[in-house]
Length: 197
Image (cartoon, rainbow, N blue to C red; front, side, top):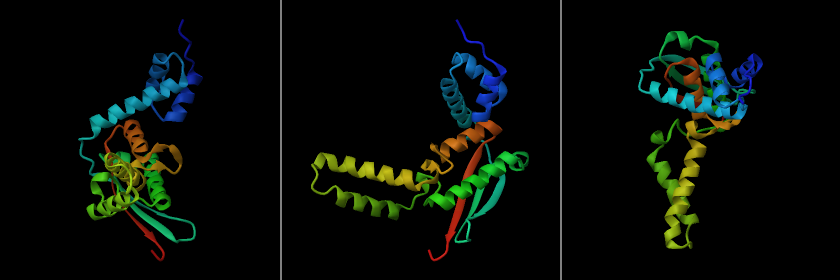
């Protein structure tokens, strides 16, 4: 026996995910009315949608600023999308502002692992090697790799937990935006300024 999917159920799911009405209805039907399963289905669909759009050129977008209260920290952030139309939407503007605010709060070193300074990574590797000293030889490399992965996830913007919703990484928020707006988006770069730093 399948559960009756109501308009309220669809509306509630849409409100919490930002997905389209028909996508929400299909996800609820497929999950037999289980809201958590429907959310998971929509997230998987969003990842698949984002993957399809990843190769497309994102040459439009916005540069925005965020100045934290008191004027001690400021961020300049560039996020690209495919069209001027999407760049002008409130959703995209809010996303750019949220990313800039996140950079101000979380102080990432770079956008992604591929951009990290090799010298910084080597210094972190030496610190990890020193901390692993005295451990069994076969465990040392695993310990070092574990510490390097932790360092990268804490310092690469796309891997950081989003300050407004720590259950999601910035990459997951970006993927959801790509699925919602139907265009490829790229967090291109940022600059963070702090008084005295």
